[in-house]
Image (tube, rainbow, N blue to C red; front, side, top):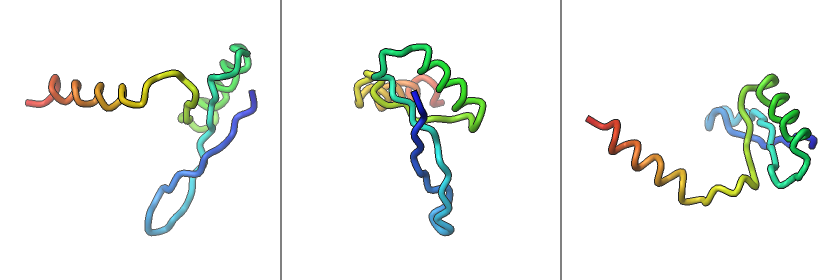
Length: 72
């Protein structure tokens, strides 16, 4: 599974862009996905994950609950 890249603004003023690999988990080839993940982590340490099956609302709910737990 070849990695795609997505531009990210690193500074609004300078409008410099950094690119992050995009990993698509819709592929049934798990070996290729694992190799792509390893490559992304080794090359830049971060990646976008798409088609992962996590509902869009879940991360927001997790952050809200963590605020309740970790706020003084």
